Image (cartoon, rainbow, N blue to C red; front, side, top):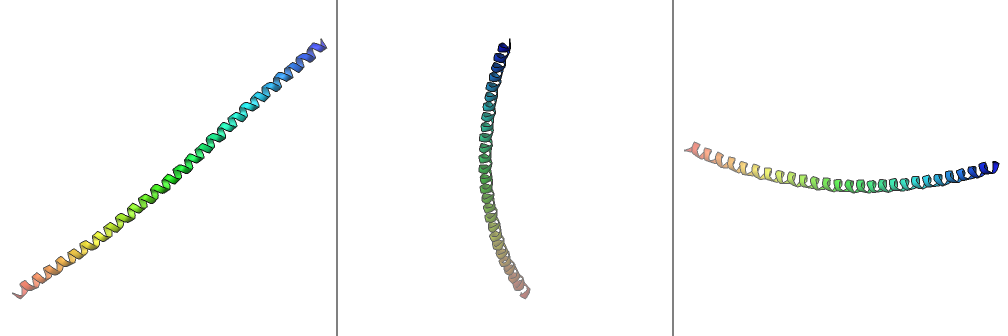
Length: 98
């Protein structure tokens, strides 16, 4: 009977040891998969940051160009208005002389 109990105990230990190894392998596989997913997400985040930076630069350039265009247009409009005022003043002076 002692011999049977001893054999049963060794068999139980062998089964537990095998299951423990399988569980460790499963955990290691899961860890590897999680690490790969985290690395992939970090790469995607870095790529998205680069795209946002690029888009921000393009928008900034467009705003700057638009501001320059508006400034130039305003200068031209002021010059045209000043010329029209001078012409009108000259006509009023002429009319006042008559």
